[in-house]
Image (tube, rainbow, N blue to C red; front, side):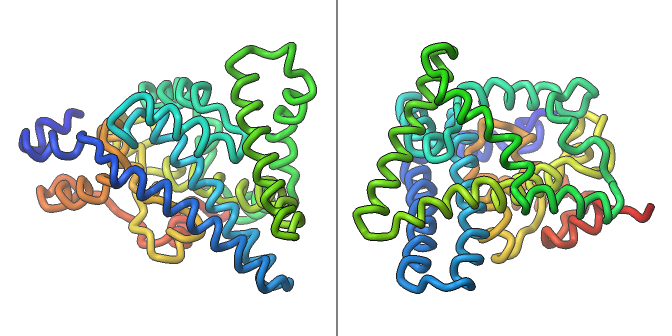
Amino acid sequence: MNLKDILTPQEFDDLVRPDDVRGWWLVACNYAITAGIFAVMAVWPNPLTIVIGTILLGGRQLGFGVLVHECGHGTLFKSKQTNEFVGEWLAAAPTFNNMKSYARGHLAHHRLAGTKDDPDLPNYQDYPITPDRLKRKLWRDVTGQTGWKQTQNIFRGLMNLSRIKPEQRLALVRGLVYNVAMLALFVAIGAPWLYLLWWVAMLTSNRIVSRLRQVAEHAAVPDLYDLDPRLNTRTIAANWFDRLVFCPLGVSYHLEHHMNARIPIYKLPKLHALLMDKGFYDDVDFPPSYFTMLREVTAPA
């Protein structure tokens, strides 16, 4: 499906043109919200702020992943060099991510979405599932079981830096430098325990929001094996709570992203509005929230 057949040339050209100011604004927003969460926990340390803060940190870690995603597509900024620097150092390093490796796998997902060869199918092909099965998945997430299973490779890699591939080694070294600097900052302000909470969020709340993001994007859609993105992908008309917790930086506009991956994430709302006005979405249902989406992806036994 070619957006050029739906949009005017001017509309299309405007949408695919990166805007450095808006790109840096997204980076600044994710950092500012993350810093604000840490600041609240440091100034008012109590069970309520720590629990809520840890939940919100998981969403911000997903926000860093969203920035990795955009830089991996080369769409957050105009220049390749800026995308690579921000993606590798400011977005991937906080969570020991490897942008180049992620981008390769993700581009394969774009090529094969709507087919049985989609490499991401294991994340959502079984839906709809029973509420009890979903609860078991979320319980494994919240108790850190999923997180520990998925992050063991970080620790194995750090223990075997000399024996792993150069690309992976560089990603882990960047992550180590960044995380040591983060820990040093927390030690300097007299709150090293904040770094522990960063890892608690990595192992728990981040796994929950990451799972829900995957489910929201492609699970229990009208037809997972149709090439039309309106049938194999979902956009959620997220409210402020969803944007704060589950879908940072506009990541809920996933259908629009699959319409054309060259369009920066900060322009996807405009694309959504244009397609709505042109009647392209007349038969498409957009869940108003993540909680509504969860009802759609679960079914009685």
